Image (tube, rainbow, N blue to C red):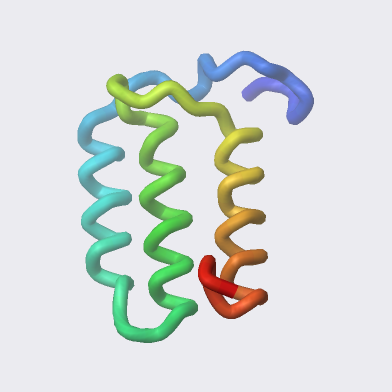
Length: 79
């Protein structure tokens, strides 16, 4: 395990099985409520850490999740 402040993404080696699992769970929890949609979006973003076709970091995901929560708090993108 690396330090929390480390910029290295070595703990998140490509893992197609983990990507599929996280995205399947995201699809399962996605529903009509904004909370279930938020959770699904967060799980999908976390799965990007293990997707060899994605270039992301835990820090980017945290920023993205904060944005998702802020948008929901404001009532959506259109407001």
